[in-house]
Image 1 (cartoon, rainbow, N blue to C red):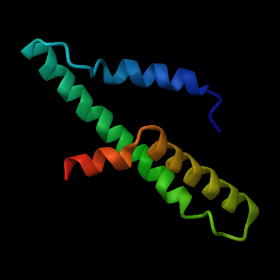
Image 2 (tube, rainbow, N blue to C red; image 1 turned 180 degrees about the vertical axis):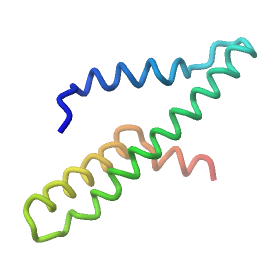
Image 3 (cartoon, one colour; image 1 turned 180 degrees about the horizontal axis):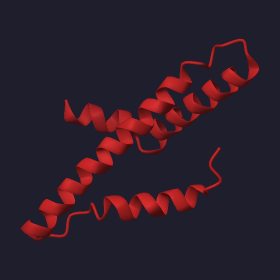
Image 4 (tube, helix red, strand yellow; image 1 turned 90 degrees about the vertical axis):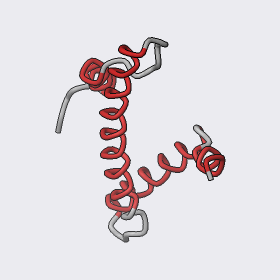
Length: 92
């Protein structure tokens, strides 16, 4: 088990990925778009891990069920907090 804190991991990832917000300059924004792709790749990987864990929410083994419920709850929180379902519908 890793003893690195969540905030340290976030700080490291921020340094590794770099800025992603648009700046208004073509050259800078091109680099930030490349960084955004890295952010999307990482996010996809992390969400996939949570999604896989969420599938354990109906298991009878307590620890597996606990892990699954926690992951499912967090995924639900993300959809609600960031209104992801509304954003997807707007694009259709």
